[in-house]
Image 1 (tube, rainbow, N blue to C red):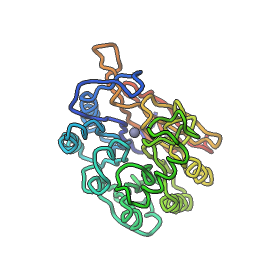
Image 2: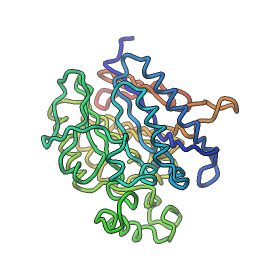
Image 3: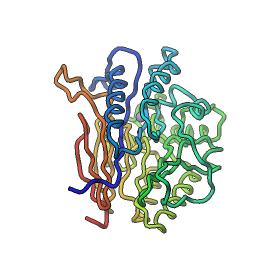
Image 4: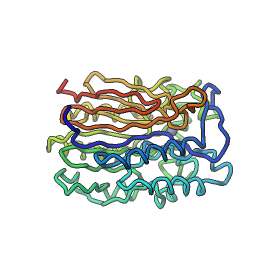
Amino acid sequence: MSSPIFSFGLIADVQYADIDDGMNYSKTRHRYYRKGLQCLQHAIKYWNTSEQTCFVLQLGDIIDGMCRNNGKSNEALNKIYECLIQYKKPIAHCWGNHELYNLGRNDLLKSVLLPRFSITNEPAKTSENSGEIIFYTSEKMRQDGLCCYHFTPGNGFRFIVLDCYDISALGRENSHPKKVTAMEILNKMNPKEEKNDHTSAVDPKYVKYNGGVHKDQLEWLESIIQHSQNHNEIVVLCGHIPIHPNATGGKICLVWNNQDILDIIHRYSCIVAYFAGHDHVGAYFCDEDGVHHCTFEAALEAVPKSIGGNETAFATIDVYADKMEIRGEGDIKSQTLKYRNMQ
Ligand SMILES: [Zn+2]
């Protein structure tokens, strides 16, 4: 078999906290809070030994909301930092709800979880580069305090990272217009007092731990995709929250305006996949246009080997001209993703 053009590492929902193991909200699955960090450490060691791996995609929720209850958000983030600096190449971070339980956007913007951006109002830089990975965002996205950006590892591939909590009840002060909009949406679509309870919602996705993408970010997204389409690039879109109802177990973990993103994706043939975390059990669906929707299993919930589990959950993805090979470790399954129009 020929060698890949490049490879990258991927991990989702580490949710580290220095607390004893617990259960999820519905008491159906165990959570191994300290072990999440060990899983990340193990993954980084693994990727450091792989020459081909040129960046890591961290899909969000790297620290758990519980840290805040103990006043240990920054302590937890420091532990994560000590772990992340062991990786010698770039890390592309997504922001999830748990980041926003711990820190406001203004603090996150100054944290280790914000990649260093180059700001350009050009739609996108083309992909011939020196092999150095540069994260680009626009002035408008930066001013809005968003963690959305794009980058290319070269060879005609581009990754676009969305900020799925652009319109959100989390991370901003009550008077912020985007928080006001988020609360209007939630109050209208989910009348229950407890906004994390989906049982009375018009659609179960209208819960506080999900969020939406403002039209400004959608316009930015489309401008990047348009550029990629014009330059024959292959594009992978990523965000913390899934966007396809069939790529999430209970159809709960979805971006509020997921259809707006799907509509954009389906207008451009250059997009081959959408990668997300957030829904810990993981899911996969190939939609009617051949776009692969991959929701990756949480590192937090990888059951220790000592009690019969898979111990870990991360992946290394080998990228070829016509497909990606997901090499899963532990809970993440290995899988081939053939690009649409090439199947
Ligand atoms: Zn999440």
